[in-house]
Length: 324
Image (tube, rainbow, N blue to C red):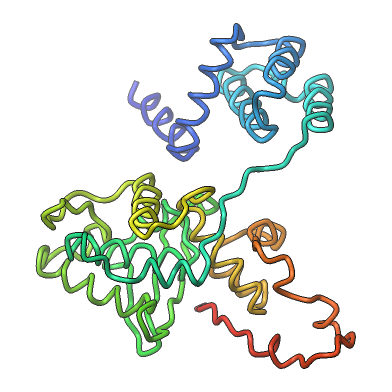
């Protein structure tokens, strides 16, 4: 029994907790529709057909992953590997499209406004929020990476701060990576705001180097437990509303998308962006490059074709992505 319990524990950890929760939800939907495990390819294909048009193709793909995982877990062949199911999903994509909904990027102008102190908030909460959002943007962090940081993961240097990310969505085994955040000066300097936040934490938790870097804060400024990944989204949207900025299409992922977009437009090399964000492939980085101004970069001008104007403007675009 002891051996079995150990095996079960390790099998549980084979998937991230968020993935396990998503699979459980997806499987619940499949069963509510009338499906069961094991299922035949015909049943799964019919499930896809019934859901087509009301769900995005990406959602259907995740549902198939959950169904496949459920079959593998009980030692059964997965119907999702059948030609029937694959062709059905391909047909759904051709008829309904396969575009993935993407978060709108936080722009540099929005970031400057987000970094401005808000007198209507408690000073401690306001400082926490600004530190969280500035670091989230500068590091291109996923929200789960951001809330998992601890003071002991930071190394302050003359140039800025080195932040050790112990594990992430694309690094489930915890190889880790180091993200460098450079000092930039001014109100939007993430390092300056971070140092002020660390001073607040040290006063409240003198021995808390291994404690969470980002905690909940009450209206009166009292520090609480570690923030959840979902709370990053809430903090960002709340602050935008206080600034009378539209939150349409905005989520915590907008910080990450904003960093990649700003860096790409400024001409930073893709390898540097990839190392900063922890993306596993260049193609993944490309999917994050989003800009409302489709004329932000003139590819013909960059290539050297005459445009009747100086290239000095394009050359002056600089966005230094810190790497270690």
